[in-house]
Length: 120
Length: 491
Image 1 (cartoon, each protein chain N blue to C red):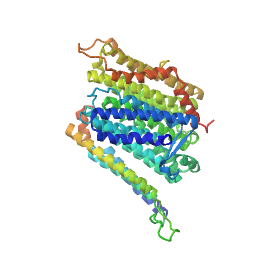
Image 2 (tube, one colour):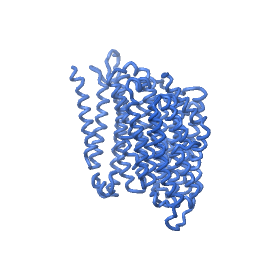
Image 3 (cartoon, each protein chain N blue to C red):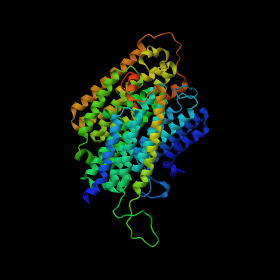
């Protein structure tokens, strides 16, 4: 079971690295925002996966039963907030990109640098 | 009423921000937000008073007891930081009342004040809360509103500066989230006091180590610690003038507070500095920040950029004070928090007045401005002297504590380096002062002294740098007892 226990962490780390790589390596601002979203989603998955309890069920007390094992609901609840934060960040970033497109006529970072004349 | 003050400290600006959206009228929303910021300052002052008299305040949200419920926990440290944030916002918001065109986009003034109040409530929230996850939530409130504020700058580069800050800030915020998650895995709680009690049981674990790494790097991005400062110069240069003044004086200060909280309350100074030897990393980075920040500042042609790089070097002083892990060092770092907020806030307000008069931030356009706007530029000179650390100004107090702390530890080279870096500050301040006062004005334009509504806030902050340079009881006194309180466990 040991390798299974570690398996979801590997998925999270791979996803996280994909996201960070896109943020760093891509010049297109929209792609950067996509990378940022993937990066945030990996953390959300990390939190949710930590709430798993082996053999656990949803934390609702059924009538008459109280010897059940429950999954930890707290990480899920925390992630509701983090998802909202992620959406607001993405929305704000896209709004900025729209205005950058209006002001500069491009959303490619290397072209923007050329227009501004200096590396930002 | 009195026992609800900790909640009101955050809830008041939060809901007022929403009310601003309903008011819509630009003058009314400005007066309203000024009143709210003064209310926040009053609450912060009462809270500090209460903490000094009766000790730690613990406020349970919704009547749920910690660790189940969210706790607002106010000790001397965050009461002190609350005062800094509330004071700066109370001075910056009324700046230039009655004068528009301060690069606030026309027709969207009420949105500006809405974002401003949200930013204030986020900063106050980070400071006041005793719940680790709450820190993340308020951090994102602050960040999102400050991206919007920076993007309101007139130059189109403000948009790119805001975007760069958004990308780096989000990565930083997410790192903090990962760190909090790992601490939760290890301790099973989000309440800071609980975490602090349970972490020692897990000190050997790699999870704790990685949690600390993520938290430090995340906060480091927000604080603009030396190699992570990339976003700061552009964000400060292109943001609207009053926003630069507000963010420079508060946002990095609150991040510094989070770093202090993480190191001294959550993980414990003994573990961080004796087991992990964190100062071996932090001291060289602080010294590099002090020297590289100041050196780059010397070569700037845009005066807001100059002050932004000077901020990076000043943050170096603060982290240096922290990494001494001694009473005097930490006092120096914490008192510099307050002092730097005063002088950078004041200096950026001077630039906001200059922007109002000549609509430029280029140093070349400011030739001979000292003759046209003597009161404004005199404030710049005093703020500059304080940055250098001339005796009689607050900058001297901070540097005094830092040098004493370095000598106590026997680290003489560091004491020498602190003094040497001050000379770099002399160069970049003198260079612009010379242009302001000893060059002939470019053309005979009718430039008038800044209006009183701008001069008064500027001089409140600059006057503060002189007042607290002589009267150290309130700042260094409080910072000293905070340092004692935080290092209680260390010899």
